[in-house]
Image 1: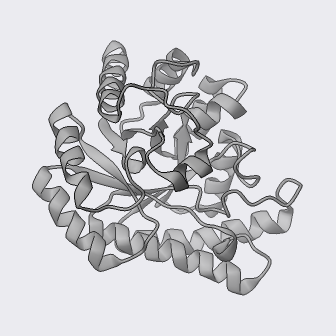
Image 2: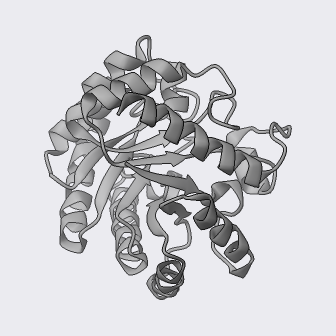
Length: 282
């Protein structure tokens, strides 16, 4: 198992101020970090790849698409912009040395039609993602397609949707991502959800129901860890938590109050929690 920490708790774009945080995460025992990838500059991420190598930290990355580059849009130009944006993010991942690109990049986050996905949107999404997956294979990065709860998107909301989507894309570099926060909202049975997505599972986010310290809230952790262990999953367990440091992220995640002592405390406690839960099952 590999243990990671999503850097969105501190920043949405890497700069020198994150270096002490990275060093501390390595000291805690994290294997790697998940890098926000919203400004797509290959040379920039190539430089950061070397810095992270120097710290001994492996990496994954996270990105999103919006209304202007929505891969399921009926407008061919907007749809192509989404495909191109995802391919560019993959090029940045290759420069960074990221193993996985995860996120809800299947469609525009926070954009709603007033209904569920149409058959045409689904077809366009599968066709768009297949092109992205082929590029992922070319650059050696694995996609972790994320199901988001109904309040953040309408295209892929649950494990069954995600498994069907990835099965229809039908490419070895296109995998599902399971997120405990979204599953807590959408799934009636989290163990069954994990069993459903297990054949395609490529990445896991460990996230509490209030987005703060994992293990301190209402997520059904026993069921989640039991099912992950039973599935044989042995990839990344990456903490995703949010706070008040980033105004743009606060607006997107709707976090209005501080729910932990410090970012460092959250990261340390989350790592200890994940390792203890996995140790019980192995």
